[in-house]
Image 1 (cartoon, rainbow, N blue to C red):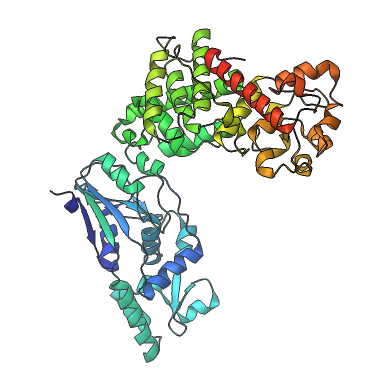
Image 2 (image 1 turned 45 degrees about the horizontal axis):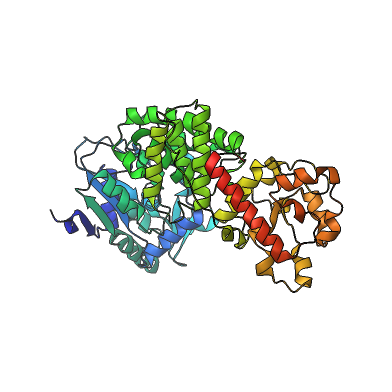
Length: 523
């Protein structure tokens, strides 16, 4: 069969489509997913069909794969049907199909009476509008569950005038004959189906990639969606909750198959995935613990490239108790990735290569011994944007030095400074407004080499003062510690250096510090 014939577009009538659902010809994979549409979306869908507007297509997968599937649609029970494969599983369009099935079966037995009430919709033939049956105007309309069933429709028609009956007849024909676009995928591998699904641009409420992947792994004892959500909730407690589902799935893939493309998970046996998920939980918290305690990174948003977590998790999946030599190797790898911008191109090959080395590191602690890099001081003269990778790398580097606030000499609370993008904890050493009075424009003053960590109270006190003025207030006994903690040239802490000289000197010092981190893992 040619590739083109593996994806088949059809346009069955709505009546036929709903009949296929009733007979079990279309099944919904069991994602334990709630109905999320609002009442306005229900009415909008009905109105669009009535006026013949397009409402998007459904995506079906015809396969011999035996996936766990729902025994009801929108809470409405479906009759038991023999498991006759191939089966058409609904991958996209669940909200729309559930809505339509519910509206035309709102009086059927249900396990969710509240949802069934929301599907109880009438049509007013005089106004030609759709309204909920609970409103007073509904008494003059006809319930939609009657229009596609002749045995229900005929007794209802007698209470309407001839003109109203004509409108209702048109309503019935429009819904019964509405052609619903359906795309059916056949003879594709699980991974191909996953790729097709990921590239769909649907106007409805699509299933996420995670929910799709869970179709291959669902069991009564294990639900991948719930497992990932639970893990993210626990990570939230240690300020790492901003990890997204896709990144966690990549970490899981690294654990179970030493690969990084989450599509690989569709071919993993559920029993292996259950074990892999248990190992992931241990490995990801060990990786977070490493970032927090060894590198003092208190929030995932400051990791220069979040995908750096994948190789780290890959390492800790091999060993939860690294040696001192392995910890040093991990630190050197981290700083090398951060300051060489190794992952900036966004390609997976570098990540996959590092994942392989991490697996080696668990057995051979000298894997990263040859790491070296020349860090150009010019990168620290780039624009200060708190979410840029160089800025994040610099913030992480400053955190290693136990920075002290200028006026109080107190240690900067990294938990506060790195709680999020907390701009109040970052300070322009030569204030922007002061530099502006010297004719130095914003794009030259707002650069990484002019930034340090500072307590917000000191930041407010200094405000736009000249460096000569506010640096005179720095406690003399703490100047060395403050200079060291801020990676600031000691001779610059009197504020007398011309701005250009200060920037050159500090950029060189930042570069030397970064290179030291890559060479030794510490400063």
